[in-house]
Length: 217
Image 1 (cartoon, rainbow, N blue to C red):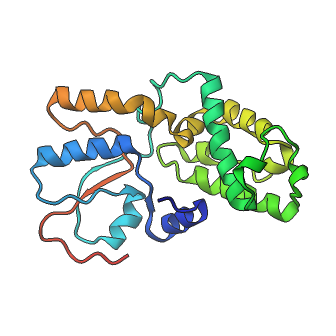
Image 2: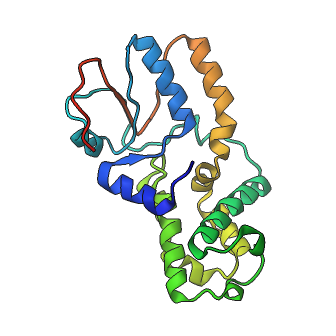
């Protein structure tokens, strides 16, 4: 089950919570096992805002100022063609969600005006894409920012995909899920071989001990 980009943005604005990447969840699980906790609550997002909703929670590990996780991004080797295909798939999903058009009726190389897109719809598309990128908290804030006129500037999904892969390469690695897929096996192997939790630059990992106050979100 997935929620829309707009709903994810609302949850982030209200609670500070963002969807957790699997690579972070694996690290958090290993951390909890080694800490000997009976119960563990793992949340990814803005630490200060989340803490305001969970008073008294003990924080086991936090991010280093939004710095890049080298295992997640720096060492990912994905060829451009594969990344472009995966990015186009995500972009097409956003386009269909906003326009309510069936995926099978949308051609990636067709001019967007072919689908009766007007300025109001383009504004909604830009906002949906901006919301999706704003959730990538592993990136620096500047890397998550997009022009508000992208769907005015690029006239097909193929053109826009090319721009995103070229100018927002790291964001596309995360958005497409390829960074996570490439690193999943590596992270699991390293965590087991070290015999201890490896937690590097997570946005938030919060632990809930046994005596935990009631959550109020």
